[in-house]
Every structure is written in structure tokens, then in C-alpha cells.
Length: 177
Image (cartoon, rainbow, N blue to C red; front, side, top):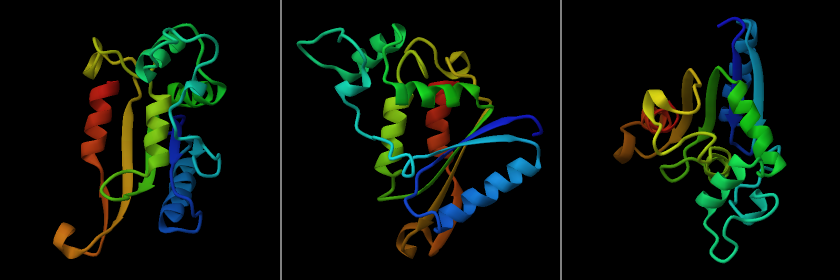
């Protein structure tokens, strides 16, 4: 792993949480292995999760009927995305390894992380409908999701489970590779 660039997208509001501890260990271990670690701590950054017209700088492609997907695609092509999105996209482009660290809320990622994905991984940058799987636009070599789950036994058969999120990884792989 020496020399690899790692981006950790962290979505938990409490640095002293179990997720915060996992993040700290990951950063320490990756650094020991010679990796360059960059982090997007979404809560600390006060990342705006809402996908709005403010994500587009300049004119809209169709000002009469706003369609976020179309507008961000057109804005990406002309270099018209907001500064915060461009900064996050640059981090993703530079990464060899992308790790998502977050708790599971109601069987899903936190809204702030969903918003990050919606806003940062726009069409044209992260995917194109004609280019998926191995022909995807981003060639991040490895995705990993670590989720801390606390659930009742009727759902998971145990109280605490730390697991690798292969279904989310598969959907991201489908989109980006």
C-alpha cells in the first residue's frame, strides 16, 4: 500500500464515537503503511447535503424546468459546478483507495453522506449512462465501506455487528468502474 493515496469520507457527528475510533485507527494504520491519507469529515466540514440550484455556477441549461441531474451534468461539462463540489471531486480523482466510514441509520447511510454522493458523484464526473462497469469514468482501484450497526437480534442475529458493506460497494462499483 506504500505510496497509495487514500480518501476517507467520514460521516459521523461525534468524534469520540466508535466510528470516530475506527477512523483514527484507519488513519494511523494507513499512514504507517506509507499511504497519503486525505479525509472529508462531512460533519466537521458542515457539508451541505441538499442538492440545489446553488450547486450550479452561472446560467442554467433550462431555467424553466429545473432538473438537477441534467443541470449538474451540463454544469460539469462547462466547468460550472460550485467550488465545494469541485474540491471534493478533486479528492476523489486523486484517490487510489476510497473508504466510506459511517453508522447505519434506518438501514441506510446518514443523509449527509447520501447528499455527498448525490452532489459530488454527478453524471459526467463519476458516471455516464453509456460507460459503466470496467468502462466507467472513475478508475478508483478499490472502494470500501465500513458500517457500525447496532440492531435487535430479530434483524441481524446479534447486538453489535461490524461488517463490510458489499451491497453498497457493488452499487458504487457498477456506477464507477
